[in-house]
Amino acid sequence: TNRFKLKLGCWTTIDCNGKTVIIAFSLVPAGEPKDAFVWAFKMFRKHLGAPTVKFTDGDPGMAGAIQIVFGGDGTTHLLCLYHIFTSLFKHMRKLFGSDKAAWRAFVDMFWRIAKRSDLLSCADFEAEFADLTALARATTCCDEKTRELAFEWLAALGERREQWAARFTWKHLTLDVHSTQRAEAIHSALQHIISSSDKINKLWEKVQGFESDRHYRRFMEQKRRELVYLVPSVELSILVRDKLVPILTEEALSRVRKQAQLASLYSVVPDNVLEEVPEKQECNRVHRVTYCRPEASSSGGTGSEGGGVGPTGLPGGRVDPSRTGC
Image (tube, rainbow, N blue to C red; front, side):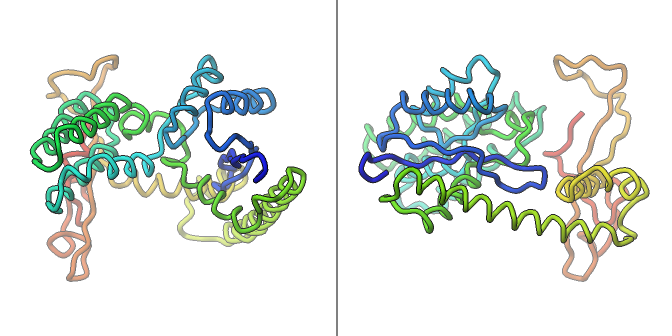
């Protein structure tokens, strides 16, 4: 690969146990031209089909190739939040100069916007992003040209909201993936076993051997964890013990347990005073869903008063207004 200046790129996905799996890899020129990505994506589509969701670091050539090859297949192209924040730092940090407090406030506001997942808050995105932009415009550092370029980048980020903001992306099945972190981890691990001077056949053998070793470790870990579920536990309900254990993997069971724990933090009550029903929703009854956030107490209790009962009847619960919807 060193002779032809090629870059290795691994295609990863998640198996039924929540583990990262390499399903393909490609070698493209170091400049990462769009034509090279188009060829790689066509080969992937030919042998494995079109992906439902694809995360990238936002590379323009890759984005164009996705549209060309997978545009007619309904593939959703999402952006890695880690790379977005890296670009945010690169383009916006200089505007704040030595004002670290203003920069922290800007970053905190960005992450609140990025992580807010309530579907009903989609209509609020414009106003929230305008507040973020206004906070940056209040700074006085840098020359006019630098500021102009920074705000052009920020405006473009806002236009791509449906590719990174949780309120838009959580409608897609991503199995808790919100970045390219899994692929980056695979690339980092492969750097220790492959060399830029390896020939393609040697590279193929090393990548195959790497994935085979990981598959064996995943298999052994799965068998060990399966033994845990064979032991009677008071934590397992009758439904989980009798119905779900025989058909679900341990990863799926852990997700069911997690969702069950989260479900206990919500209360659902009829709401007859709601003035208007969200658009595009037809229903005969309207319910208000309220999230009750538990709080730790220094006195040993779970509530803010050392173990009180919250509005939803849960110990130490406190209503989080940002997580209330209908």
